[in-house]
Image (cartoon, rainbow, N blue to C red; front, side):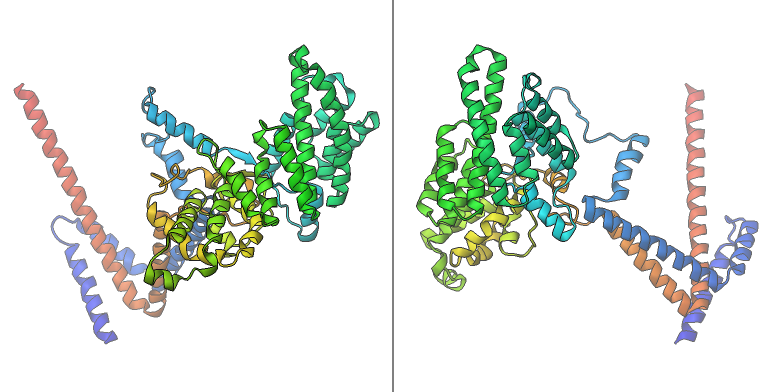
Length: 539
């Protein structure tokens, strides 16, 4: 059979050589091409196809790595960013009309608000928790972007315009801007040599203390100093704008200290004491919702299994006017699942249908999954957890990690809750087939979450992406090209003579097609030019 195939391929090559001598094809060019192809050996074709396969394989590997890291194709990004403007293309990101409609303005505002980065209300201690993780694993759990956001928060909460009037506060104002942790700690000690500075105790408790017990002692010292500053500034707050700014700063410092003391009590097992401290803090400062203390309270109440109190907190904060969070949505789902999860069976539910309570639980799970679709994989332990960042993006992977890190134990404690979640959570995606265009109970899922999460989360963590992106065209193209050239290289190595004749036939046919089309284009151009010229003479 191989001899018959060889004869057919040779006849194909001779046929192409005869076609090259047709009247429209130059004989000199045909002879030159034939002589050139006859000089090529089978080794040349093996080297050509092998090199092509190697290059396309390297491009495929690079494209795959770039897609996994940045979520887009490198070739596509370069072509859109650099080549398209050179070719006269229009940038889709540029506004086409300066007078935008009210609907577009509202949607853009909603997108900006949903992509806002929030401080994690359950953030860990740097010295006692994050640094200990680094000492054990050698990995940095916090990114530079995350720590830079924390530095901005500290400058906003703990500084004011009158700090230069007090030497210790002036030192701490510089310390919060310092990038080097050791320099910050040294500045805090320097400030404490001048007086009992509350913000200096805060910095040492956050970054120098290596245990929660040490951090709690430093926060108690900060509380003593902070309460004195708060009482003094409270009496003078109406004497001018500077005094009002100083009182606002002292209020932020006092609230921060009390919240961290409550978190220390929670971490040390004194949960009831922590709940009392959080309730008192929320009553004393009801307007400071930026700290989201109610999320700390929800977690502590779940630890006490005080589900009635949890429901009361949810009734107050699960309001349409307030920004939602994974903690609120998934805690509401957990409470409704708790009522039916111990007796829930998928087989029985498929036979008799869902009861009213089961339907309410499933709807609550669907609501939570629509708000943040990344959480179930962490609760079901389909993805490994890492330490949560200091800032989170609502509806993003960072928020899912922060929620699951503290609340996984509460889901495990409720019998059958994870089983109910496992059976029902994927049904959410059938209700919202196009999540980036239209939502069901919430706004469409924001596009910016992946980019922000990649900056908030460490590089060793594989960021969860929703909706799952399809492979770019150029990855599929390079994969096909690599496979095709590798197959040609293998066939050329196994059957060099047959592939040599086949290559000559392909090149001859390509030359004939190119020659025909070039002649056709030239003839059409000349005909158009003559007709245009004759019409011009008539006019």
